[in-house]
Length: 220
Image 1 (cartoon, rainbow, N blue to C red):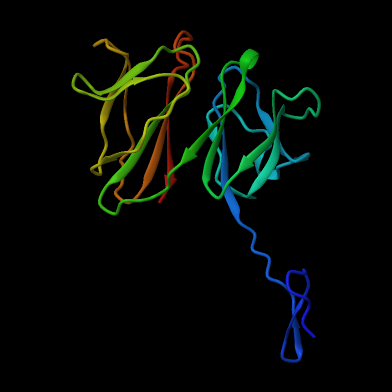
Image 2: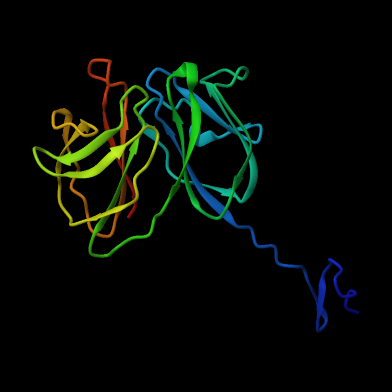
C-alpha cells in the first residue's frame, strides 16, 4: 500500500520498500589566516573543532572542505584555547558555492571576510584574481614592473574579478593607487593554462619585511 500523497515515508515499489533518497548538497569552504599579528588558531564549526584546521599559522590557506549547505556557526580561537574566540560568526548561510573565509585585519579588529570563489577553468588561459588583505596599506594598483597598470585602485579588503592571462610568469609591482613608485615588486609563479589562482596581498606595509604576496592555486 502506498502512503497517502504528500506524506513522508517509504515508497512501495513492487514487493519492495524503497526509502526516500536524501540528496545532501555541499558548499566548498576553505579558511585563510591573513591576520599578521594574530597567533596560530583553531577553527570550530558548529561547536566542534575542525581537525584539519588546528594550529593554523599566518599565511596559511587551507584546502577546500565540504560543508552541508545551510546556516553554520564558525568560531576561531587562539590555538589551545576554548574561550574568548577572536572571530565568532553565527548563522553563516552557505549555498552550493565555493568560499574563502579569510581571517583578516589586526588582532584588535580581526574579522571574517567572505569571498566567493569562481573555480571555472579556461583550457587555454590561466585565471587569476587579486585580494587586498593588507590592513594598513592604502588602495593599490597592481602593474607590470615599470609598465602598465593591470589592476587599478584595489582597496582593502576587496577582491578583483578574474583576469584571464596567457601561461607564464609575470613580473609585477604594487603601487599606491595613482602613483608610479613601486612599494613592492614580485614575480608570479609560472601560471598554467587551465588553472585558477588567487594572489593575496598580505602583511603590514609599515612593518619591515612583513608585507608581501601569497599566491595560491585554487583549481587545477
